[in-house]
Image (cartoon, rainbow, N blue to C red; front, side, top):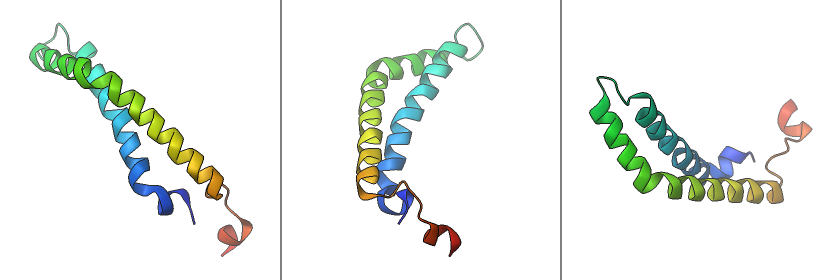
Length: 84
């Protein structure tokens, strides 16, 4: 079985935990001094409260998922799976 079949929920959760704070950081930095300054300020506040912790926990969860998948042999596709 593949990585997504066995570890779908923690994998997607970890990607959201990494991607969403990075999106907040981007909006906070790119929107400062523009018409979206209010939204940029809010995104900066959300980043400062939740961003670092979410990135660390998301990275730890992603590493854990990849470790478990590697140990279970889910990362390497066998020739039987590839050829049907």
